[in-house]
Image 1 (tube, rainbow, N blue to C red):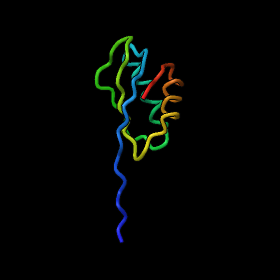
Image 2: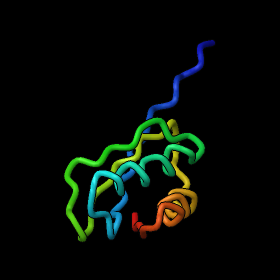
Image 3: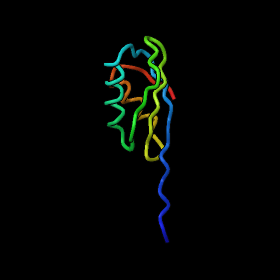
Length: 79
């Protein structure tokens, strides 16, 4: 019997308040500390507005943990 590998999952978060590359780096760094997170991608920074952040994880992402990580960086997030 072979194990079926888990598929990676992508979750979109909408992060408010990021204005620059440093903001993106801070949010990315905090999100990468969340269990299961493999990659964080910000396609287009909307300065001062709501920016879509895509989080790739090795299974279901804990939205509470992701929101807490974004808040730790100084911003707010919604799924």
